[in-house]
Image (cartoon, rainbow over all chains, first blue to last red; front, top):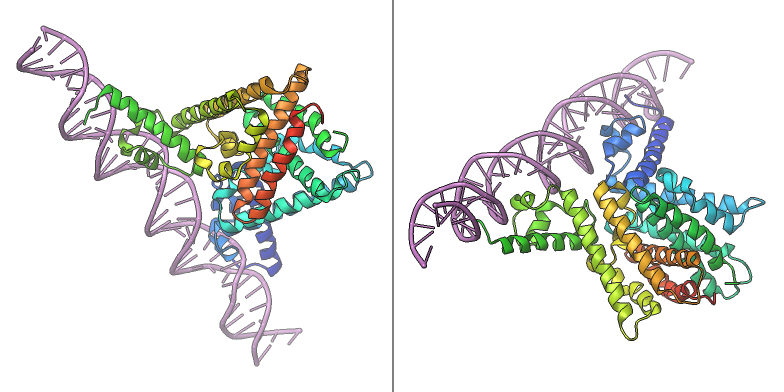
Length: 197
Length: 197
DNA sequence: TGTACATCAGTGAACGCGCGTTCACTGATGTAC
DNA sequence: TGTACATCAGTGAACGCGCGTTCACTGATGTAC
């Protein structure tokens, strides 16, 4: 059952895409190779023609997920009405909380990464670095000390990621608390991003 | 090999204690019942005389871990030199980052909790609520609107948890970034806790 | 206080299951002539 | 352009392993008399 080179490439991409969604939704250990390949419309046997191991797929999926999330951030900020405040509101939305599968990889994996394969950790750290740089570049010009810009960007990122992680962790048992976390951070975060705090 | 009632109670407590440490260090799915009981000086066969399931142990360990962390927060703030700033500094320390096993349960488990058993989620949400209340009670009196106090407390908690999670996630591949995250948050966080922001 | 015995915490082998990975095989692709 | 054949993406059964959980058994505890 050989297949066109192009088809094979599409299959490979489909596996990475399905993995990116499933890993975010259920964690790296929560999904198996068989389920991922099934989600991509294949069987698990051919998996190792494309990837050396499940860990190698995890690293690649992690990298791709970060690239997409960063592109989305850039795209949103490039829109005519795009500013950081709107990005914060969408990041801290109930919609984002409830759709883990295509949400932020940091909010999906942060507390897991330390136990993953070194290649996964490397992709993750690169991705975090990319987010920090993107935020630094978009902070208001009134914060003019470059070191202060980085400090603010890091504080914002930590607040976004921690807030979404806590909102998701409490969504099942304490939905009001979960909603309160999101609403509170939407109200408080702009203060960190603007010099008038 | 029966054993004194008191010994049995001690064994049970030892299992919960070992579980609390191992689960924080390696995650709920990263440690097995056999390893936990071994760490408590027992064999795995007797485990089910004490707990209905691994999930039941996870819930109990989670609750106990939160209670200890909260007690530590209260104790630190009760000291003569105790203030929120010192608590932030110790939370955001390299020491805390590198000692997952007896650190904050939120920074250890946040992104995992959504996939755990309902009982674990309930303990976790209770624990988060407890932390929020403790922070609200300790914010400077100058923040006098009760709703603003809660908002600030939630923003602080999200920043602490997200910051520690990101610092740990990047510690392996990007140690300078990891250190920068901690140092930046130590510098930026007091602004969230004080009215002069 | 002393004795007989039921209880039950603890042991270690075993069970069943799902997982990551391997393997013999298939058959259309794409290359060599 | 047409033909022969090596390649290799994909299949599905199988392997080995570790896990959560069960179970028959042990023997000191602690209770009943």
